[in-house]
Length: 182
Image (cartoon, rainbow, N blue to C red; front, side, top):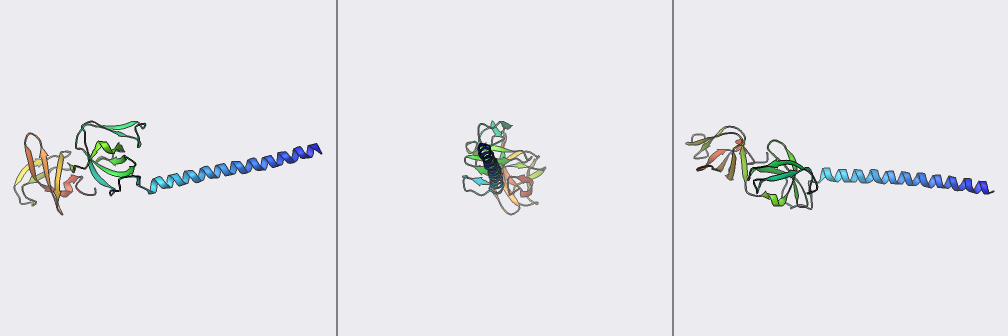
């Protein structure tokens, strides 16, 4: 009789243990799927509420891009140019996932970013006095030149370049990264 009770206890224990293992595995699978679907489908988690994607620029000349949204994540890339334009592609609390003209992607804290509208010249172009191909040429602009975008029309943007001298003029919109939803 005692052996039968022990045998029945072992069978019940195996059934309960099997059920618990199945339940835990199912729960882990459900949680993993729920979290991964959330991260992929949402671009903003407790973010600013502003539209995504959008263009911003760097506030400081030395800025670190991290591999994740927090100071505990390692530095992925180092920027050394104040005003460099970035595209925000996602938000997580006070962190912004950004990408560069060269498709370098990482995370930056909002305190490092500015809403000053900056851009990069993408190909050799001419700075014109008026928004027209027939307008007088003020300068020849080379690729990767950092510019300030004052305003844009349908095909042209009025920009400002500060070097030894300040240049203000018009360039074709399609020659600037940061002027549109590129």
